[in-house]
Image (cartoon, rainbow, N blue to C red):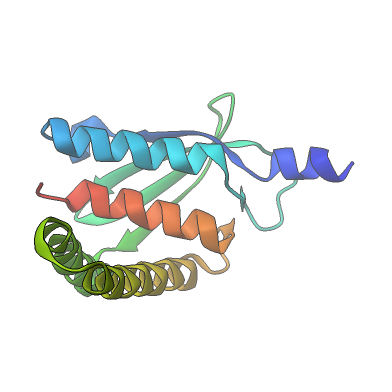
Amino acid sequence: MASEAKEQRRLVAVTLDEASIGRGNPDQEHERAIAIYDILEENTFALPNYDGGPYALRISLIDKKLCFQVDTQDGAHLISHHLSLTPFRKAIRDYEMICDSYYQAIRSASPAQIEAIDMGRRGLHNEAAELLMKRLDGKLILDFDTARRLFTLIFALHWRG
């Protein structure tokens, strides 16, 4: 019974709306594919006060807002949530800067320096996941790891490569 409830409280599909987001360069498409794969491998996702599931999530940009369209796995629309990207801009910018530093450090820095930068990178990623959970509080139920993976995907949507 518990495994059946867990199977219902999850995403089985995540798609990006190409009409609003557009296709990226090959590196961006690769990062997006990895982010989606990671989300689908392990996640906790549900709607408050709804016993259905599993779910399909479609992410788009509408009027410069992030839209999470939640459907049943069969495609029946359940709900859409629109989030302003403004609260995420600083997190995205800071995360991009530290990722750039990390990739540069891999080429020339000592292991201790790389580890220090990576700890900072993970810390920023965790803060962004907490922000996403806060913004979705009462709208969607997700665990911390799913929020981290969704932020990875949100970041991949903005990544310039």
